[in-house]
Structure formats: C-alpha cells, structure tokens
Image 1 (cartoon, rainbow, N blue to C red):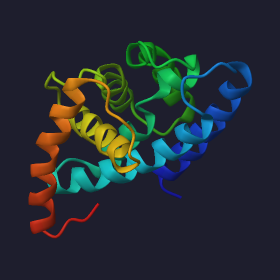
Image 2: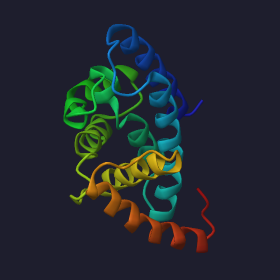
Image 3: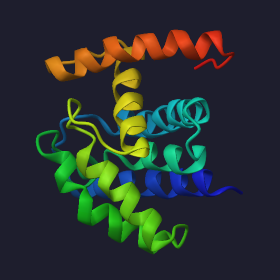
Image 4: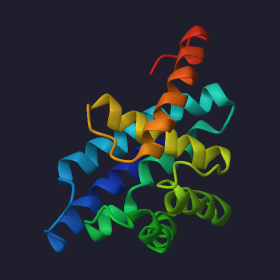
Length: 165
C-alpha cells in the first residue's frame, strides 16, 4: 500500500477522532473527508504537470486542512494546523523530518492565496481553490477568486498537454 493511501486512512481516523471531541464545526465531517481525497488527486495531477514530486504534493494536499480538523474552525485554521500536523505526521512514520516540515509549511501557508510559496505550497493552494470550485462552493475572498482565474489558464495548458483533472 502506498503512503498516500495509508496517510488518507489515518487522516480519516483523525477526522473521526476530532469529530467526537470537537462537535461545533464550521464544515461538516463529510466535507473534510471528501476534501482531503479530492485535493490529493488534484494535487497529484498538478504535480505531474509541474514536474514536482506527485506523492509529496498529494500528501500535502491531503493534510492541508489539518488545523480545521483539530479545531473545527475555519478562521485561523491554516496557522493552527502547523504544529498539530507535524506531530501527526511524525506519528505516522511515513515521512522524513524534511518532508514533515515541507508539508507543515504548506499547511501553515495555504490560506495565503496571494503570497507565492514553494512548489508544493503552490500546488496545495491551487488544489484547494479548484476543489472548492468543482463542488460549486463559493470562494468568499478576492484572493481565492484571483487564484482560480489564474489557474483556469493553467488548466487549459494541462488539457493541451494531455493532463485531465
């Protein structure tokens, strides 16, 4: 079994665990489960197109909302996820220290859609916006809408190159 599949199973267990502890949530638990999986898939394909490690990109995409999983709150969830996701990833024994830090930084910075980050971080931001859009969820912030408009050009390039989301 590959580590993305193992990670997603462990994330679903975490969602269930924190769902029992934190009952007041901004997003339903079902959304969290769907979102980790669909973001991971989008991130994997985007990474192939951008010549970035697809496994790392997909794993970072799967973990990006860990702060909302543990707090139940949307506001400040990216920053709130940094330390908890590091502890969680270490416990999984699936990642090196460097990989854990790379994923944790992407988690911490993914809500800053107008700021430029490293390749994994940018894939996480793009996958997050695309996933919300594909389910018809309103993007409330202008920086999210701008990123989506920019990604639409990337999607056209990907389609021309034979990549399909």
